[in-house]
Length: 180
Ligand code: IMP
Ligand code: MG
Image 1: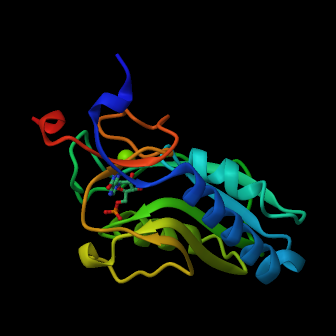
Image 2 (image 1 turned 30 degrees about the vertical axis):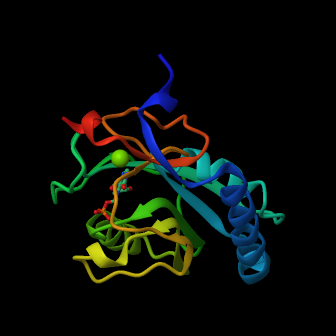
């Protein structure tokens, strides 16, 4: 059974994603290239974006992943944030770039930013592939945004619905019957 059958509409094609990720990577390299940046990918949603982005950032840098859970299997935030995998390196004095798949209510990132600030990095920059500003609840904004996203639930390129569709190579919207 192919995943593609469940997709109602393609919102961002592979080509669009690739072109924008390249621009973001080059911009970040230009802005932070001489600062030995440390990229933190937020699992699991950012794993595809992180891999593509870092290959467009042509500078010496460090990287690690963290795992944060704030969503159940549904499509809206539970409000509770839990760190399920922390960093394995110290970020004291480092220029940190948080790499996130999508900034929605902002609850996850605002919690995470405060959580990391305690370790006294030199700076914290936020890079998100998608931003849904209309749904924001927490006071947080991203420094780098790939695309503004309509207020629809999207899947693919790392993003899931009930832990599926992360391996879809583009961004799509599911057929309504999939949710029921
Ligand atoms: P926030 O705390 O509400 O900003 O939630 C951010 C997290 O919710 C993201 O990292 C995603 O894992 C998930 N999320 C929010 N919107 C979507 C969506 O449209 N598709 C898939 N996951 C989403
Ligand atoms: Mg998710």
